[in-house]
Image (cartoon, rainbow, N blue to C red):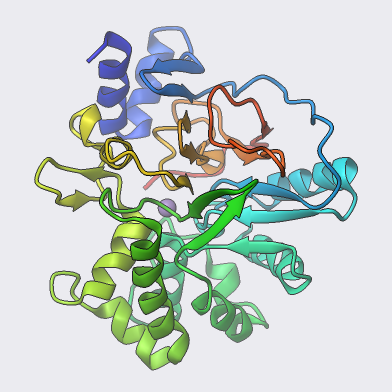
Amino acid sequence: MTGSLKAFSAFAMRIARPNERRWRRMGRRRPWLLPGRDGIRSRGRGVAAFAPPAFPPGVQRIFVGDVQGCADELEELVARARGAFGDAFELWLVGDLVNRGPASLRVLRTVRALADAGRARVVLGNHEVALLRTAWGDRELAADDTFTDVLAASDRAALLDWIRRWPLAVVEQIGGQDFAMVHAAVAPEWDLPALARGARAVEARLADSTQAARRLLAADAQRDEDADVLARVTRCRSVDARGRWSARPPDHDGDAWHRRWAARGHAYGVVYGHWSQQGLHVAPGLRGLDSGCVYNGWGHDGFLTAWLPARSDPAPFRTPDHAFWQIPARARYWKGP
Ligand SMILES: [Mn+2]
């Protein structure tokens, strides 16, 4: 393991606050670009400003990292998209629209308006699962949960019913390239049909009824395969040599879920989020878009990251890739655990 990767792994294992203090004590900010073996990981100041290339006519897909209630930044992104593409764009969001940030309800309403117009697709994240379970009385509100605006909303029931029907995974194509969009991870051994099969089984139970959804979300992942798939796709960060997955950051770089996935040589790409401590992850076949907008100031600057692959690009997951927009966080939102 190279020095910078070792430093990165050590960083990833720490909680942000002591780390931030440490960096401040050292009188410098974290470098914003850490080279990886397979691409770039960027933290801090974000990637270079991206001037939209001459996109071919048609609808531009804009993949969006974890919003987590950062409604101002999402609205800035949408305004920028309108300026660049008029109404000819779609938002594809990797989940975790809610929680930790200041305005979960506004984010949901913004995305729902676009989704109702057929212009947004979103997959289920672990914070949506937490929101549903809390709303149904199956989970206590945690001290750092901020989705009480959704729980108190006049359209709460409609929003919860809508979220319950979000897909766990979207399997699609860009420019003829197969890819999946998930919140956190796919299993290293899954091909796209296996992912789709697992996701559809979960989605069917969530969509069936509130009671069926409650049973699935309360199920033991050791005994219920659908519950295991749901937890893995929305929470996994590492997979060990024996194939056991964990939500924890990996102890060794090689245990990152995407390292084990990449070692399989899959032909499909994966767009994902959920891992703000890793930051923007650009590697062959992989676009990890969670750059910690809501954790702005916790050891790094936060951004809402969007990826705008050209529609007809025959190899949209190649590297290097500069097709990103990053909206800087406007405040320090999260007050800590
Ligand atoms: Mn997440």
